[in-house]
Image (tube, rainbow, N blue to C red):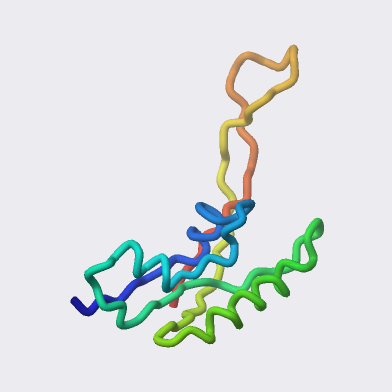
Length: 116
């Protein structure tokens, strides 16, 4: 069976490989192992370029290195989108002793990846 695989790079990285020895995951091999009876015709990898962070200025360089390596795979396409950032209120955890017993909410920035 001819199969196209769609990968959300943001969720793959942050949900499965960050902080593990599998950051250089062979995505094509993973697809073949997960779908042994399928002919992987194309892999479409969706991502957005990351920005440098104050505590980690090398993030864009590391991402670019990974994307260059992925770009060498046959039948592998990288589709760039962009991150959406919005502010939401979330229940604050770990309040100090003596804090009011009612729930306290704090603003939190949330980043979502949006494909093209």
